[in-house]
Length: 218
Image (cartoon, rainbow, N blue to C red; front, side, top):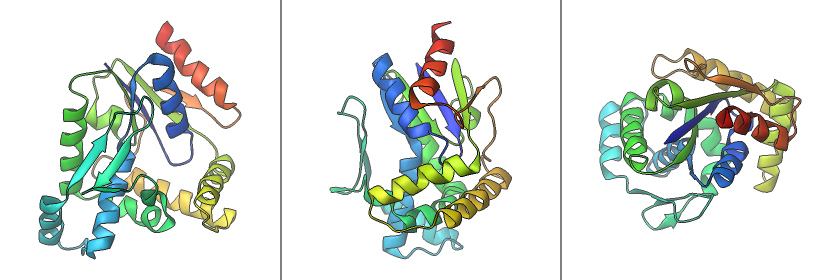
């Protein structure tokens, strides 16, 4: 079975999905990491995103592997290189929306996501999981939070990577990314049909996980 958790950056998708998967005994699957991995690969290969032939050629050569052996974590590799932390850099973050908006990239990622989850129980998080990838999922959730809280969470993420970032710049980046992700023609960010909205603005971490568990247990 697949449980979907969608939402914009900084709303608490990752931490919530990981903990939910742990408590349910499911596997956690961060689909956003896949788009980040492709973005990192494109940066390394200096791929021109405006050239479809270049994009397709690069996708044909990418060697992406995901390791689900950990109980709650997933590791992502390019060739033999573990890029699980490298994909969280500011450079990748600033370019991932443009890469994930490419039709060929999305088609490839969706196929991989569906194949990985064909057998097993997964908590899957992303931006189009309940709308495009698994529209028939039994349990669908959509997380949201105000920009100030999201910016604070993003700042903490960058500090863990020792990357200096101004919180006002982070907030502006989040607003721009939301506008871009929500208005793109292909798989825009939006609330999936029948999804339950969880506002994490004033929630403790335990409260937001509990709210989701409570709905599932019903």
